[in-house]
Length: 334
Image 1 (cartoon, rainbow, N blue to C red):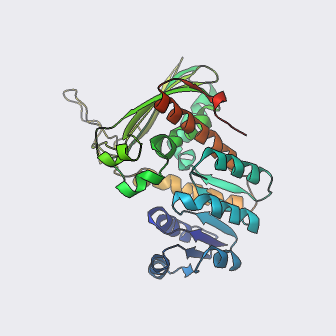
Image 2: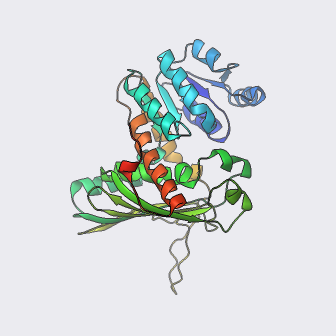
Image 3: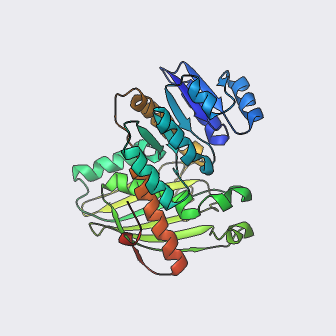
């Protein structure tokens, strides 16, 4: 298969390496708005390069992977659908709720498969947690704790176009909560604060946030995020049930040290970035996308899935701004 890759920044270059090593991929064809960067990445990795997305699609690719900055996602997804090319798109599919709804309708009315890049769905820990819930071994689930704590903040230039911490960061938590539990979020109450760099406040964002979600079966979910977790990159999910509890991310890389005397867990080393934390999951999701592109399996994460996670993020941002609980019925969904 010839796989087209639009965007060769940090995540795009990483995807280029991953795709190049997957069985069944004969060539990776890259393009980027920065033509010099595209040429450099192509030369370094032995890939084909095209001067733009139109040329890339015209070169006979079997699938398209979108890994540009967020503003490029929606127009490129439209191009992929119009060209009839199976498309993988990093989250978010669009910067606004309205455009996300529009794209969900467009994708639903097309026979072209679209796979959205929520890589946690392919992490073995989250999959095992999902299986524990589905098997009934935990009994009824009464509470969940989800954490996404970045070790250090992104560059200041990223924040104004990120959509804010709930849409950029916790949207992964919102998606995986839906995936693992099989339930929908009914209401949210969210807050946030700034203790770090001024550029978060200047962009109308926060550097740390928290939310209480109530699911449609009355499960309570506590969600937290921060851009400043000096102990390491910390992404976890705790599921507490009537008959047992399980945790995702509870291993020797846990970004904590114990305050108890004589306890040497976790032993480390810690992980320091999302790419390090989810390396196997990123590989697994692109392998799954090749199955989707070949027509052997349906999309494991649709544009509608992305829309539902975005709606929760939108509700959290509204709750934070207006300092009140927000019911998901207040957030447009179709």
